[in-house]
Amino acid sequence: MLEYGVESCYNRTLQRINRCHTWEQSALAIRDTAAQGLHTGVHMIFGLPGESREEMLAQAALLNELPVTSLKLHQLQIVKGTPMEKEFAQNPADFVTFTLDQYLDFIIDFLERLRPDIFIERVAGEVPPRFVHSNPWGLIRNVEILRLLEKRLEERQTFQGALYVNPKDSATGGNPQQPASVNETVPS
Image (cartoon, rainbow, N blue to C red):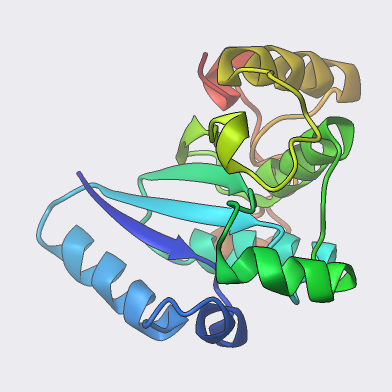
């Protein structure tokens, strides 16, 4: 397994956050890695400056086109003393900040658009509270976020890949995928 910190599919964002790579370079690296028979993991951050909710969701379609084996999803956590903390203080409207409930719904919306065969390793990041600019979710741990996500998936009667249509099937009006169980959608 080789993991890539892609973070965003948008070059303007990658440049803004000083990633020193483009989306095209990431996509090529992922394809080349998979061509060597290695599993590929991708890290994505949601809430980066300048990206709308719709743009963040649209990244699922771009990831679906790549031989991605697994994803680690993170909400943006602004670390104290960083240039991003200064940027957030100057222009908070440029950032999408999520309450926990909003993030759960966003992640579900993202998962619905994602290929069902991509393994989700993580849905949120954890930075010790003393290091982050603000901690709107309190001291909640990843295991609790997963529990809440599974519950919300069941409430919404949905699953990873619910809105995904395989391009190979789209010419014949292919149907979205059906999971065997919610636990296969988001592992605990």
